[in-house]
Length: 499
Picture 1: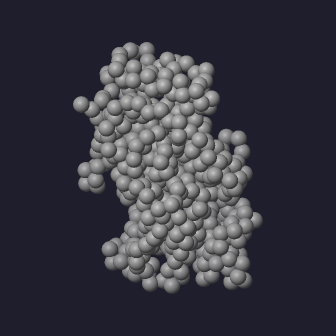
Picture 2: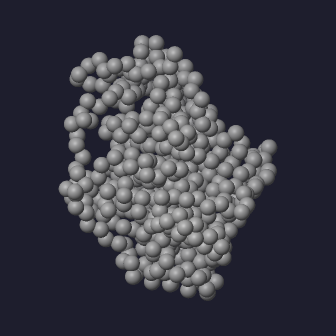
Picture 3: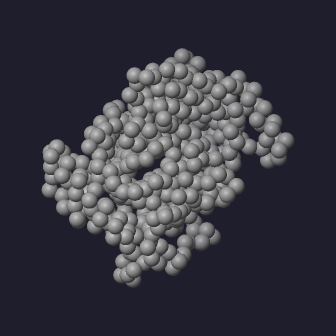
C-alpha cells in the first residue's frame, strides 16, 4: 500500500508523518552513512525514500517554504515531472567562469559514497535517487552582492518530493509521489539527531498548515504599484540601434539585449498565488520557483536548455518571436509572417547550429527536426526546433557537462558568444541575476533537466524585477523589438496582478 501522511497528532507542532518502521529505516540509513563516513574519512550522503499516495507540488511547496530560507518548485510538461525541494543537506557553489565545473565536482564527490534506504517504488521521470537542484546566473560573474542570488547555487535538498502530473485534460491532478529525505553525515554526526531532524522536517512539509485559511492575501484593488523601466523605452531602443550598428560593422552576428521592469508595490506579493496563476495561465511551460534567503526567483518558461536521460540528450532551439493575434485569422497571418521571415529564420538557425555543434562533441549522432515548428503561447509565438543526440559509447558526459557547454546559447546571449557577451557587459547596464540563466536539477548518474530561465521575475517582499529580452540581428527594428519585450513581460505582470 502507498505510504501516506498520518494525521496531525499535536496542536503544538506538526504531525508525525513517518511511522515507527519508516523512522527505524531512516535511522538505519543514517547509521550506515555514519559508519561509512568514519571509514572513508569524508562526508557521506544518506538518502531515505518513502511513498506518498498523491501530492500537489504547488500546494506542498506553498506551505512548506515558510519553514526554510531555501526551497525549489519545479513542474514540467516535458516529462510530466514535478519536484519540491525544501531545506539543504549540502550546498554546492561556484563562481566565475568555472562555476559549473565547481558545482559538478562537488556533486560528483558526494555521489560515489551514497547510502540509500527506504521502500519507495514510484516510477519517476529520468530515474530515481537524491538530486542536486538550483541554478546558474546568466553572467559568469553577475556582480552578486550579499542578499541577491549567487552566480551558481545548487544544493542537495533535505526534503525532496518528486512525482508526476497527469496528462492535459485531467486538470493537472497529481499522481503518486516519492518522499526522499537526505542528509550529509560527518565522522562526529549523531544519527539519531539527524534522523529526528529529517522526520520533523517531513512533518513540516506534509502536515496541513492550520493557519493557511486565516491568512488572507491583500486584494488586488488594495495594492498600488509603481513601475520604472530600466533603461527607459527610448534609451533601450537607442541601444538596439547601437547593437545593429555593431552587427553591420561585423563585430558579431547576433546579440540578445534585455531590459528590466522594476516594480515597487504597497504590500508584499503573494508568491504561492502568483505561482499558481502562472501554472494555470501558461500551459505547456515549465513553472519554477527558487527561494534563497529573502529572494524568490520564479517563472514559467517555454524553453529548456538540455535534458539527459537513458544516454539520450535533448536540446531545444527557441528563437524568433511574433505576437499572438486578436482573432484566429490575425493569429494565422502572424504565424505566416514568422515562418516566412528571412530575418527570424536566420536568428533561429544561428541557435540551432550552435546547439548541434555543442551536442556533437559528446554524441554519436545528433538530429534536428525540420522544418522548425511554431510554438504558440498565451501572448507570443516562437519558432522551435528540437534536437536529439545519443551519447557516444565512450562518453561519460552528464547533465552538468552539457550545461557548461551550452550556456549561454545564442538565444540568450548572442553569436559569436564571446564577442556578443563582451558587448553586453559594456553596454547593457543590467544585472540580469538568474534571468536568462538556467534552473533545474541533476541526478546521481548524469541525468537531469535544466530550463532556460525566461518569462521570469526576482521578488523581494513588495519589490519585483521583471525581465524580457530580444535577439537582435542586422535588420532588427527598435520599435518592433521593444513591443516584443512588452509582450514577453505580460505573463509575469498578470501572475503578480500588476496589470
